[in-house]
Image 1: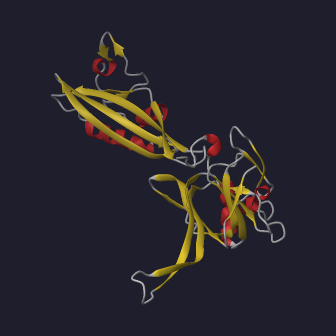
Image 2: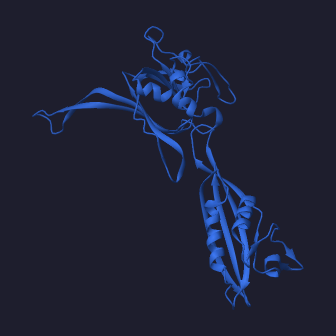
Image 3: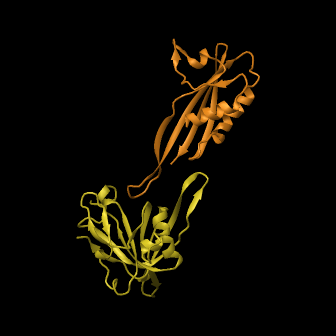
Length: 129
Length: 178
């Protein structure tokens, strides 16, 4: 799930905000997305399995829920010129990235201001059988 | 109080269906449906052509007697006698392409599948094992017709599920597995 998202975002983002192949690890006690602002970092997917349909025999239908978190830090004082376009591209990645076996997908994000940095925390959720 | 256990692996509910044969099914027995049962897993070795309905979500065994009520002048309460019962098996199941549409081989239940049996209104014989088919369990058998199929899916549901009813023709036959 992570790789198709990165591929799609790289194709679509050509402005001042870009996407990295690296994971959002901490370097010297500081998250990479805070160190390298205006770069989107996608974390490792987290997969959980839930029962979709319970049956009386042993063939329960399960669904895999894959969550991919992404992070972006921008200047909180001066709004980035292509931020709107970037948010649209990030939202469209939910359906336009080459993730063909998902029957349901979700995208949402929250924002947080820390000092003079505006941090976007995105979450993609993909449901597959 | 004891109870009918349907939760362990060997006690899982089983619904087996075969095409009715007037000669072979004159007197139903469990050997019409399966030849062996694994005592540990409860897995059955089906007789050739028998279909096991997979992915059952729920099952209801209906045995609903009719009633005839009448009043007499010397009693304050009504009298009642029962009349013929309406017997049905009803439930819901997850569609499996092989068992729903059949293997395409022959005219057996497994060959034509659940949809084929319903679409052609083929009379079937069935065996419902409420607590599995390992030795000592009670099972019900009978004849009937498959109906009420209504495969459904939706935008939120990636798989098809369907209700199923076996309209029982006559009485249930109870047997105890050997």
